[in-house]
Length: 195
Image 1 (tube, rainbow, N blue to C red):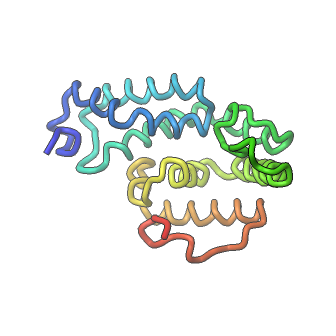
Image 2: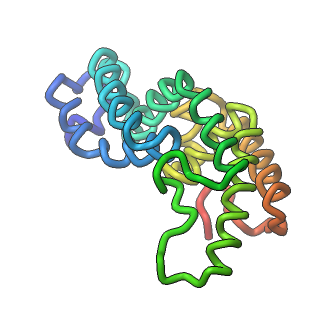
C-alpha cells in the first residue's frame, strides 16, 4: 500500500508531488472546461500549493482525487464570474471564449447541418449552465467533466450525498429543459455511474 492511499498520517511532501504526477492532468482538464486553458494552468498550480499546505488533510483511501477536485472547485469559485460570463457569451453569440475547450464542434468532417445544430445546442447548454445555482453547476460539472461518483462529489464539496443527488437531479432537469432533451429516468444508477 502506498502513501497516496493510506491516509493523512502517512502523507509527506514528496507524496504531494506524487499526487501531482498522478492527477494534475485530470484536474487541469476539469479546470480548463470551466475557465479556459490559460487560467486553468494557474489554478492547477494553486490547487497543488493548497494541497501541499494542507497535506495533513488528505482524505482516506481512494479519495485524494476527490479531495483535489474539492480544492479546485473552491478555487474556481473565485473565478465564477468569469465562468458565468463565458457561458453567457457562448449562449449569446455561439463563440467559445475558451478556444474550443467545450468541444461544441469537434471535427471539420461533420456536415454543416450537424455543426449548426451542435452550435445551437451548445449555446442553449451554455445558457443553462450560466443560469444554474453555483452548487448545482459544481455538482453537474464534477459529475460530467471530472467523472466523479456521487460519493466522491460529496467528499469534494464537503456536502451530504443526498445533497449531491438532489443538486444533480435539479441541474439535469434544468439542462434538459434548456436544450429540449427528453427525460431519461434510466440515465444513471444509484451509485452515480452511467449504465
